Amino acid sequence: MASQRLHDLGRFYAALQKLEEMLGGARTLAECSGKLLWPRRGVYFFMEHGERRTDSGNGPRIVRVGTHALKAGSRTLFWTRLSQHRGQIGSGGGNHRGSIFRLLVGTALVARGVHESPSWGKGNSASGDVRAAEISLERDVSNVIRAMPFLWLGIDDEPGPESLRGFIERNSIALLSNFNKPPLDPPSQAWLGLSCDRLRVRQSGLWNSNHVEEAYDPGFLPRLEEIMAAVESTR
Image (tube, rainbow, N blue to C red; front, side, top):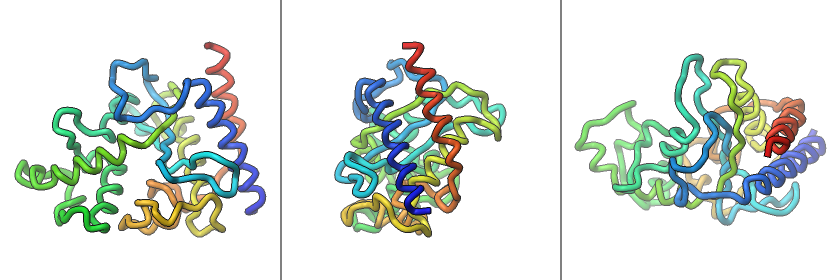
């Protein structure tokens, strides 16, 4: 199983290398805005400075995979979701209650003693006073996430339980995750995620908590490659 997963990791990263070439390089949220030509719907793949592959080849390792609008009827656009992770340009803050990515990064910063924030992650909403007390931590979370290079793949399917985006997202996470598996491309000892309060983040090596414990379907790799081939043929 480990040898098959290692082979599939190599195939996965080869596909992402091709995607990076198609996009003309990875971007960071620090340099992005809604004025760019984003797909209406898609899947994103974040990397992180200092995090490198050590088993499946050379290059940066993926530290988070995500998508959006998986519930039937959802109208959330791709850039809207990315901007929730990025935070607000003016204040530098953000809303971790609307982004699990931001919440996870924040817990790691708190654990490392960068901030104290007893209200962090408490409740689905917060008063103005609570939000004001959290702004410094929100700003640091924004700085961490905005510095991460990422790739994206447009997949404009309808929201719902059978979404192709959801299929690509969950199987990418399951393939990359080291949770309860022999570790492949493990995080560096300095990785911020090792201070996260979620065991699934620490053991998976990903800023993800969903799907990390699942087995991946190898059939997602040819589907990923087919999608990319279709995108390339329209260029």
